[in-house]
Length: 320
Figure (cartoon, rainbow, N blue to C red):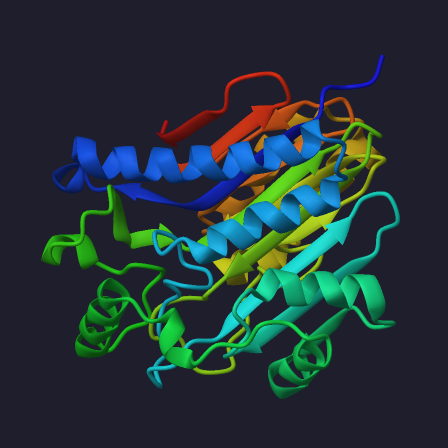
């Protein structure tokens, strides 16, 4: 019997800031996650492939200013925005990625076009923008990505002369994010299993606040921030990008399944709870396997996450 199609998404992981929690804020995050899950769920229910489902889910996450991807992306040290994304098809192992784009409205759509039409896997900076423009994708002025909350956190990061992950300490100055923005890792992602048993994964990010221009994290790197293989699983990660890169975290989940014969949850937890902490890697991941099993482990105190099986109610969560 074939597995029931399912989609899972994440919107960042981090440390809960108790003083910032309130019912209204939590409700906004749960509602955003649920709406996006339901959009992906409807696609899968209507027979769409996993690749289309994760593309649409991440596009919607990019359009939501609550998350650090697309509209609402963080600022670099130069006061600009640099966006990264990747996507992978588990059926063919085809992949597409872009990094350091500044005017592409939806980076995941550019990554998808790389997968669909290019002989290459990854484009960066001006080359990525030229490719996206040639593909007729929507471009926006850099101001489109601006939100006041992200700008304020950037000003604080500059004052602290540091590089801060995602929101920095914004909630201490009035932003109502229930996860401590100083310790929240801002990436979005989706994984899915479709009715034909195919898997796909996609990841997108605005990077880290006050990062050096040109810095690239794990999100657009196949095997680090994104991986999918029908023989094992589909994975999207969120966390301290450099550590996930060094650990090849997304691929490692697949490798643990393929070479050690571990079940999905055991493989994911081995990577997140045991291997990443050895090099101070903090964050989490979402993953689904060909049987429709879903796991969403994280080694921080919270992660914006959820999943939805076709025919069932979407489940969303923030804390442990």
